[in-house]
Length: 137
Image 1 (spheres, rainbow, N blue to C red):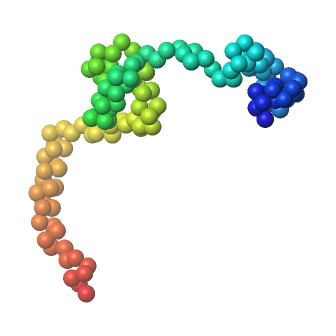
Image 2: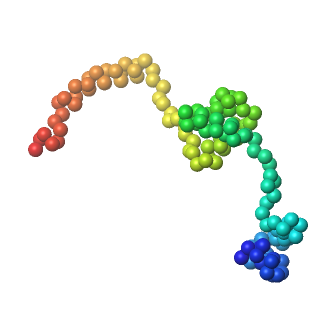
Image 3: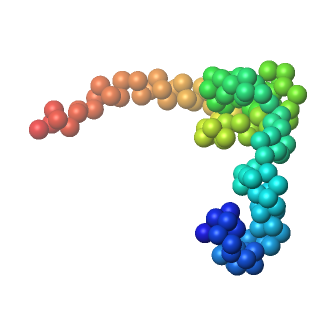
């Protein structure tokens, strides 16, 4: 049962608190808002304003779609945004996009590169000597 319906029906505040599992202060604020303004919803514009505009949000999303591995700090600097990189990091998750972290790549020395090249050269004709299974039968 919602607090607003119970209040209109004349249920005592303590009973509303018990039914809705809310504190008496919370129920009292809901009832007071109804008495003052005849509303049960939050006032439009209440709360902290967003740090980015809709246009900035679109630019952030476009940058992420263009290069998903780009860091939030790089996006913030590229777009000259006056917000924290944490704010940039939150925007894709608000729209359900995932963040990506590039897989670590091994640092190859010259000897590693030479050994890889030798292996690839030795194995380049290997597939010619292997018979496909459907040719065996």
